[in-house]
Length: 76
Image (tube, rainbow, N blue to C red; front, top):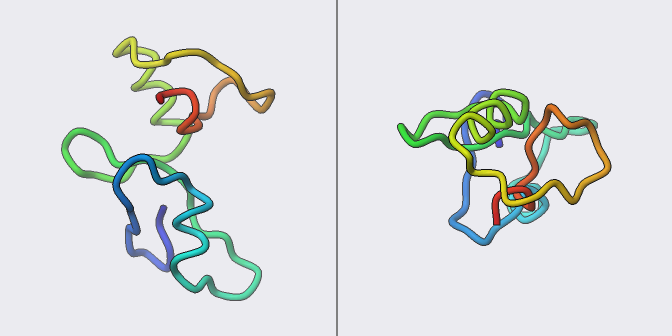
């Protein structure tokens, strides 16, 4: 997750809500949700979905949300 330009991350099995609860958020902002890639860079949920699909990393789409964004549940 990116909050005020700084990437915040926790090790697996942490989910986005764990990060949101850990660091204070600016009022009425939720940060930019995404993932850390294999080079330790931040990518958006949309970019992460494309990467995971190309690399065959999706274990099953259980979410009913948009098909072009990634959720941690799609990976593990």
